[in-house]
Image 1 (cartoon, rainbow, N blue to C red):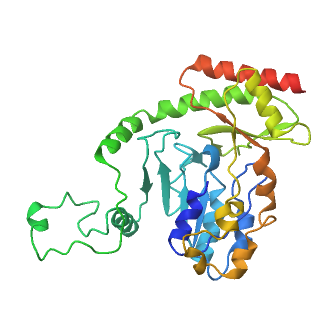
Image 2: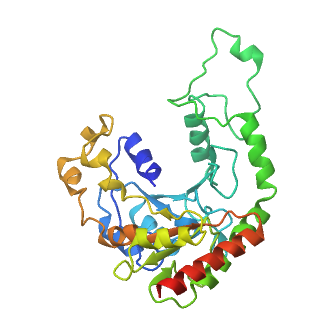
Image 3: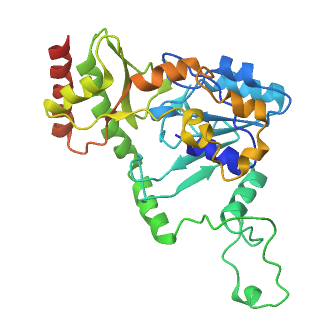
Length: 319
């Protein structure tokens, strides 16, 4: 998803892409190791589809090279890695409240960290750089903002504050998060059972020490056996809901290929810009056109069961 790339470009930094593991579909520690240079400043991991990457070796690399680790957990609420909650392993973790996520306020999100200075900087970036924000501070006093000598802005910032109404909706969702994740998990288990031992459809591998939170159920299709669209059409003909494709690889999107980065392309060296071509991350490029993403947000168990039966029927028809 391009947002992870966008934040790097918006910081006038250069996105460097590391390839993925062919079985978990997640960023590979070995690929990260090969990409680190003296100019590297941070690692952004993505818990794609609701599964945490292999964080221990990634954190070890970060310590060796004095790098910040940001966990993108937009799709991974209550996922776990070796007993630890996804998003609490790196230096900071981000979560999305966009409408398709485990919990939502329509739009918005949150960042978590146990670094007080980092938390303060995040708050200020979200609040026009206001000096008056902080974990231990209440709202600004009227006597402050009415004072002509009051110094408001400690740093540069944007107006990214989530509205109070949306925050209230998110709080209500948070109080029900265990149940929201449980329902997605139940749907994913039905899909997993439907796939069974199909030799030409391979679900995302879940390491034994991880707990998946199932933002979606995803499987890689053997497109030499059957085309992606042919499978999608057969599934739909049987009454299946739409199947989502994996996002096009970021550096193969038109914004990179046509250098339309709102002027920020000038901060990226010509050599790296030229490297944004097919072949940069061959595993990810090979997987992307083969991935089938099935919805898991069925709040009616019978509906999820019906969709799983349709998947099983489609597999039998095409086998």
